[in-house]
Image 1 (cartoon, helix red, strand yellow):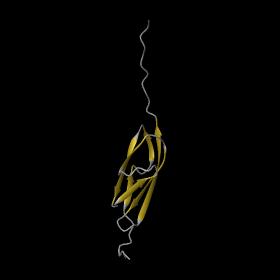
Image 2 (cartoon, helix red, strand yellow):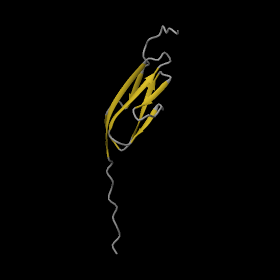
Image 3 (cartoon, rainbow, N blue to C red):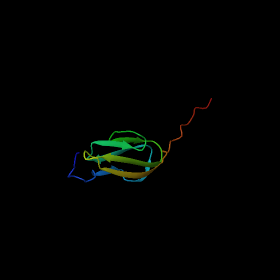
Image 4 (cartoon, one colour):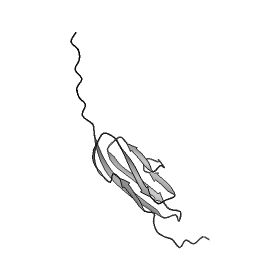
Length: 88
């Protein structure tokens, strides 16, 4: 039997923490954990976001304790300038 004296959950924060953004963005985790899992199954410390929604990351420390952080993002489509066409 293994007994852990450290029962602290890993520290975890996501950036940006929330908001309305133009175009796409990348969520970045600042974390002290040995394992990461986003709600889409990705296991990296950053996640490219292309659609609005809630994004969650669960971090698992070496002691097996977990922490979860969730952010809600609204992504607006960037305005595109209309390109004039040549008259024929």
